[in-house]
Amino acid sequence: MGGNALLRSGQSGSFEEQDANFQPAARKIADLVQDYRVVVTHGNGPQVGYILLKNEIAKKYAPPFPIDACGAQTQGWIGYMIQQSLKNILEERKVDKDVITLITRVKVDKSDPAFQNPTKPIGPFFNEGQTESIMRERPDWTLKEYAGRGFRRVVASPKPLQIVESHAIRTMVDAGFLVVACGGGGIPVIEKNGTLTGVDAVVDKDLASERVATLIGATKLILLTDVDGLYENYGKSNQQLVSKIRLNEINRLNITDLEEGDMGPKVRASIAFIRNGGKEAIIGNLKRLSESLDGNAGTHFVP
Image: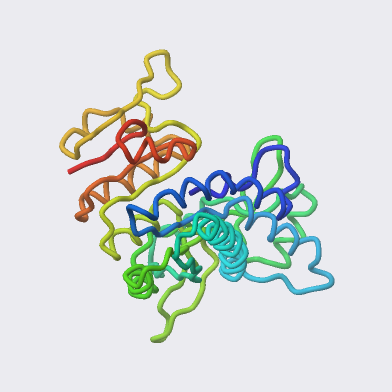
């Protein structure tokens, strides 16, 4: 579930607003527990952006935290919100199931080429005057100019290799818990001198969710967004919803069009999940979750 499902355009971003926005999704997720063992992953893009903005505003009074720690912070409070909402709904329905949030790390390769070519924008925009002082104070940052909007920090988005807590997630699922994990794509860590240490990077949430699903042996991976599924020739007069696609048919699709914007990682995650032994990957609209599971909506990737 994307972080934008919690934060809507034009809102202030308060906790109360995001909690209210989540309630319809919470009820749809709660519907699944009678038939499935469920792990929920979520995005955190807008939320971590707010934290970084607060860090920037308050840096004279309190030291700013690194990105990995900010990611952990969003995992905690978003997880709390999801956990509390789901548990309240399950108790209302007299369903005896506990919900647990797990702070989750994702191991990445310190030699990943992404570290040499940062592309993921994070945090607030800065004007030209601000960038000079920022580069003096933080020469390790990379700033990218966005026409008409100013400069913004960009960080690496390395490929997720291993979910450090994957065994713990599977153990809790097997014990009957509904687990909230890998928020925001997980906290990126690298191995350094035999230990794990956090890095200033952002792991794509869809690719990380595929790693979670594969490593715990899930049979279905559902990537929820705000559109009905994957469209061939999206945005053109001949666009068409792709309802079902087998791996041996993927080359017939116009992948260039499919991978524009937010849909690219979802396509790659779906393909990887099936190639790694998954039974079905679904890209669908959050509002039509049940219909997507029943095969009556969304785009379904199958072996």
